[in-house]
Image 1 (cartoon, rainbow, N blue to C red):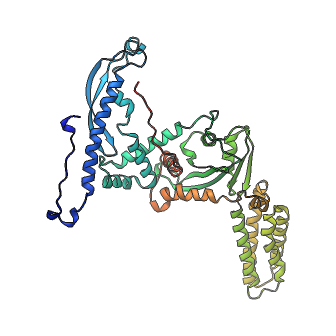
Image 2 (image 1 turned 30 degrees about the vertical axis):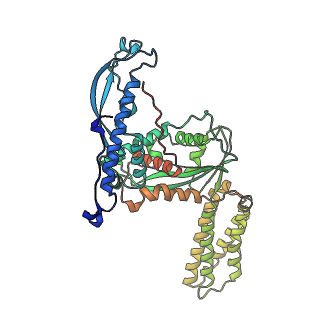
Image 3 (image 1 turned 90 degrees about the vertical axis):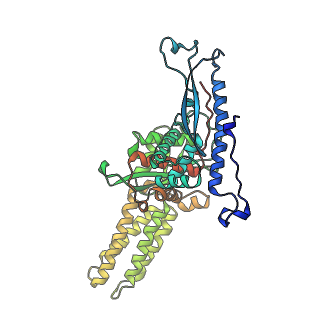
Amino acid sequence: MTTDNQLDGISRPYRVTCPDGIGLRLEDGKRILEQIQRVILYDQVDEIIRESRVCPDCASVRAIHDYRTRDLDTLFGRVRVKAARMRRCSCDARSAAMPGGPISPLAYFFPDRATPELQRLHADLGSRHTFREAARLMKSFLPCHPPHHTTVRDRLGRVATGLEKSRRASGDPVEAPPKGGLTVFLDGAHIRCRPEYQQRHLDLVVGKIESRNMCRRFGLVANATASPSSRMREELSDYGWKPGRLLTVISDGELALPNLIRNAVGGDGQVKHILDWWHISMRIQHIEAAVQGLVQTPGFTGVPVLFQRPAKSLRWRLWHGRARVAETYLKALMHDCVGLGEEPLAVRTAAARVQARCETLYTYLANNMEALVDYGRRYRNGLPISSSRAEGSVDDIANARMGKRRRMRWSPKGAHRVAVTRAAVLDGRLTVANRKRPA
């Protein structure tokens, strides 16, 4: 270690300092960490250069071409180092047939001129806060070079691209294959789109893939990828899905969500779609409230039990998987509402409200008849019946970072990158693993 790498000392006697100078201040800590980082990085760069001079193929010593200065951004400051470039070894075929120029080991380790930990922190903060706020936080608490908000955005994009490229192929073995069946919870969110794309909103698909002892969040924007189904297949394969394995999909009545999984699986597996119970229950509750308002309307001359009993039995019928019987009750309830055509205006208005809500539920059930199951049996067996996990992912991934209160407009690629990175941050998959070796 040279004398230029010595650390500065701090002397602040208590008798001559004000109360604000008690202890180690933030600026003192920044300065000390920056100096320690410089000392450690100088030694590591020297070690990288020494090891890189030995050719890994023929073990001969490479000649140094020249030295160039390079600024490296780290978590504890920007450090200017003296990086050596080496000539290619004679065993390298490119040195004669196709000259490739000198080799820079430091550029191999730090292609972005930043440490992986700094890139990870930029991506982490950029997925939790606005890019400007992330840059301000790093400037306030760390001795790193003050980043620009576009730097935070670009590095988050590179991290998101690296996360997608690092997914294992579907045929590769999984270290810990999940036990039991796989359940995919799906939901969608609308985020504001930038005006140059000539559309008001972007469709963001978010959800969770769960098994008995594992879970994984995901998010994607269909407009940002050429093949959303292929991207979804990569997510499933990365979690441990194998062709031929059954997938259970729980979502609301949006047909595009289960179709995304069907297209991703193709003919390699079976997809069982289950309609979310919460959406059914809310529509039943609307009918019950409308019927209660009808029978309590002044001037109502009908028999209350003829309206209240069918409305109360709808929930029980659908809960036990008797969808056809529930449709019959809905038809009878709508027919009884039509029979109130001679009643006073207030009664006819309340009856029209009941009829409209019954038609809404009837259409909803008819369009999703194949996705209706015996919810009571699944609930007693401890199986999920609601897409609440996907709705929680909407809050965590979309609303918390890209919601309307943020007042931001997004491009498809930018929204997709933030969704991918934020899902990795929430799952704890955004880790630093730089195991590169010099060429």
